[in-house]
Image (cartoon, rainbow, N blue to C red):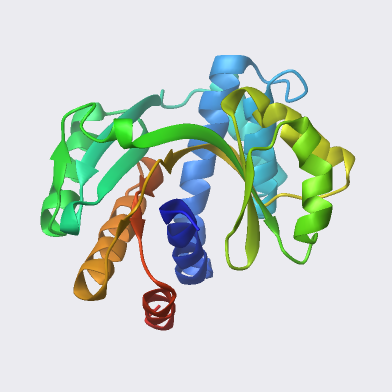
Amino acid sequence: MSGHSKWSTIKRKKGANDAKRGKLFTKLIRELTVAAREGGGDEESNPRLRTAIQAARTANMPQATIERAVRRGTGEEPGAVYEPGLFEGYGPGGVAVIVETLTDNRNRTVSELRHVFTKHHGNLAENGAVAWMFEQKGLLEIDKSEASEEDLMLAVMDAGAEDIQDGNDVHAVITPVADFENVKRALEAAGLKYTEAHLAWIPKTTLEVDGAQAEQIVRLLEALEDLDDVQKVYSNFDVGEEQLQRLLAGS
């Protein structure tokens, strides 16, 4: 199971409460706005917007909020203009970290990221420092209650899926970027609902950590994701099963 899958498992356990909903809505609204600005407000002809709307509905965002965010993106309503950013850094133990942002103030974002990295025993790095350790892939997560691994494999392999990973309580389907939309459509045609669907930075190799360093890394990634400007965080850390259970128990 990749470092990304381990972090996804920990994040789902730690973030499964209403206190996180406000921050989640902030991130989803920004994605809806940018998706509509870049590809138009018609979800049928804008795959990124369609994915963003589905994510918002999965999070139980009110329809009126979704529609308002889309109108801001198409310019029908006033609102801030968010620009994407990609930042790289190192965490405790030398693990690599990639941070995707949507921000209306890049200087503020850089300052906040640098503060969080420093506070949690890491450092913000120059562009290109760690990105070479990752590959961008399509990532879809399907609850295990939705389908068995065998049924899921039958549904997606002919559509271009590359791998199915065990994400503890979910199946994680990995695809080449070019086949991401094909696999999404194959899942929909098979009647299988996905809870996550986005392009992700998947580590080529992972770095195993344990004990205090593992806990420090989780605190760093949590602190980064708590920033309003941050959309997604990826890392190449890995932990053994016993350490994973300790981290989950500590949530």
